[in-house]
Length: 67
Image (cartoon, rainbow, N blue to C red; front, side, top):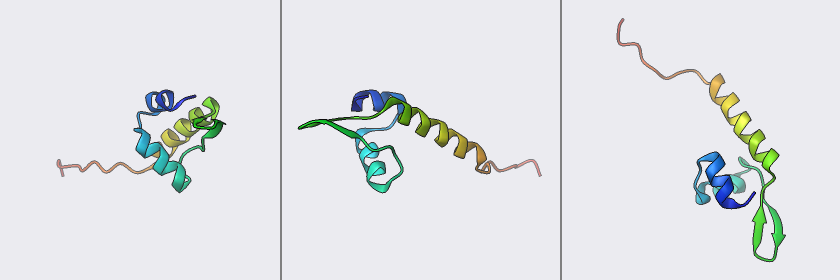
């Protein structure tokens, strides 16, 4: 997958993708040529799945004003 496809699939901007790659929070790109990179689609899909799974485990921060 090229960067535009990764942006479309994840909803992230290019700068965020590269920042998270640097921090180890996003799949690493693969060099495909002297000035081009790509990502494996299955790694992006797995990252999305894991992100949603972790989000579902976090406690909700909604306040209950009815009490």
